Length: 171
Image 1 (cartoon, rainbow, N blue to C red):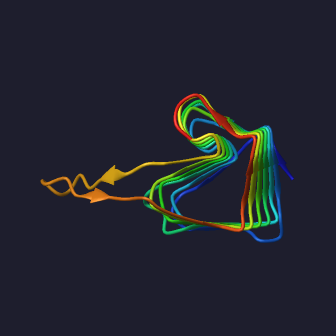
Image 2 (image 1 turned 90 degrees about the vertical axis):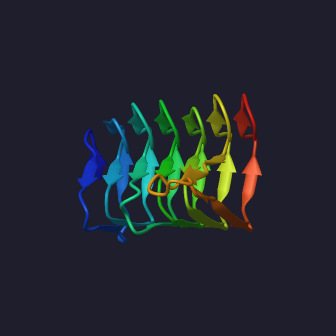
């Protein structure tokens, strides 16, 4: 049971396969977890975490390899920027998870860059003050290429429920 402080993971792996609870944590990015490595969350609960920037509960960097979330619950998390529950700057897989009453500027529950697969999950009452009440995606430009090659975000959603999510802008 983690409260009052978050976890910073710098390049290796973080696995909460036995289930963990994160309540009331605050950070600039990733109120509960900020990661530059692989993150696997299973059976975990994230409640009332916040970020002054992105990822109210979880922030995963573009230097990470993967983010995997399964059988987890995200409730009442908030970010002053993107992703009230999760800000994923890498490929992510989310399954059998619940997102309720999370809040951010873009992506009330999830803000994603890269490929995101969502299966059997529910999104209820999430809010974005700009775009994507439940989910917002971003198309990134490859800054290493002088022609600015665009790398699209691919989102696959199956057997999931969206109910009463709101945004002021699009979606």
